[in-house]
Length: 199
Image 1 (cartoon, rainbow, N blue to C red):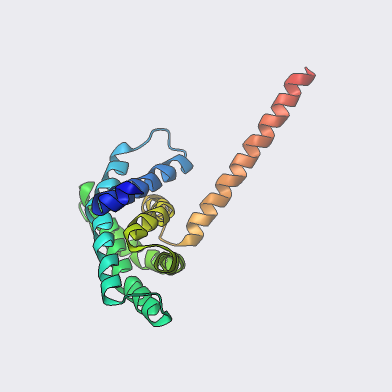
Image 2: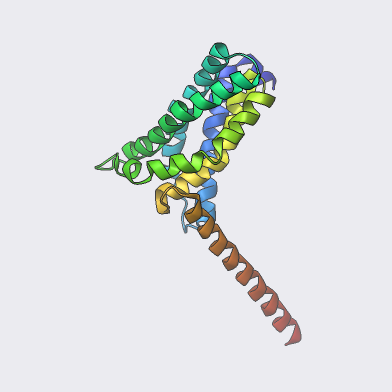
């Protein structure tokens, strides 16, 4: 906590970027890739640190400066502005930024295909997280709190970018099938161990 108070910008932006990149790492682990794509994780970290962490650090301070306090009216204004301006901007920068760093011919392709679904999915997640952020967190910890929430969100975004369509249903279907696979493997392992004991 001392580091966050002493170096608020550096600590908030660095932690946010690390947590966001950690979301990509978890996505790759869940997807059971044969080899980690560290280049993709690096690209996600670059976008998260260079834009998301910095933007959120200054954005949250601007919101608090313009709409101070925790009254229902101020909270509503902060949430409305956050979801109508910051959320679409952050989603757009993620899709286009990572595509740019991967030297895609059409950096807007993922954005065109997935932005609207991703934004709608985000509306089921971010307003609740930001409400908690504005109510519970002191200003100097709000970007870090967003980074913790962004860890889960980045896992979803990276899944969506690689194999989803930006909807929660595709991600949940994937996780459902993955959990069935793990259950099957676990049962198979137990049966194999019992077979070895009986032999």
